[in-house]
Length: 192
Figure 1 (tube, rainbow, N blue to C red):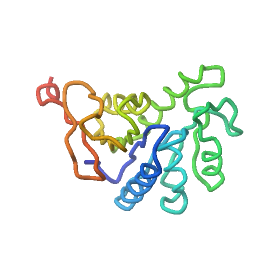
Figure 2 (cartoon, rainbow, N blue to C red):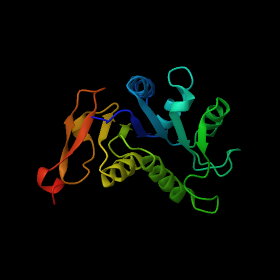
Figure 3 (cartoon, rainbow, N blue to C red):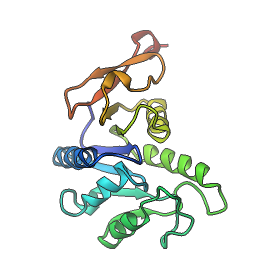
Figure 4 (cartoon, one colour):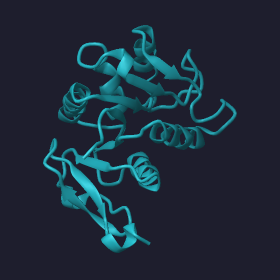
C-alpha cells in the first residue's frame, strides 16, 4: 500500500476516542519498523496521538511536525495541541513553525495551508484516521494526497468503512491493514 522506505503523511480527526489514538500509535509503530518516517500536523486527536508516541514508540528523528502556530503557542487555535508540539520539540523533534502562514493569516487558512504542507512533505502516501465521516481536515488531506498521486489509506474509527466520504470517481477498498481502506480511482480516470 505504501512505498517504503519513505515519508507517510498522517492526518486525522481532531476528536478521536481513546481506541483511535491507540490505533494511530500502533499503526505508526508498525510503519516505522517497515522504514516509514512521518509528517504530521499540530492538532488534538490523530496529530497529538502520533506526537505522544515520541520517543517511546517512534523515534523523534522519524517525525516532522508542521505547526500552524509559533514556538510559544502564539496564535494557536482551540483544537491546537500546542503542549504536545512543544513537548515533541523539547524531545529533539523537528517542528516547522508557522507552516500554514504567519500569525496575520486567519486560523482556518493557516490550518488548511498546514495540511497542504504535511501532505507535500510525504512521498510514500497518506494515512488518515477519520473519527467521523465528516472530518473536513482529513478530507482535505485525502484530496491533497490524491492530487499528488499518493496512495491514500483511510481508517474509520467508530463507524463502518462504508460511511467514509467519497473522494471523486472511485471507491474505498478494504486493504486489510489496521482495518483501513485504500482509495482506488476508477481505471478510466487513471489513464485520462
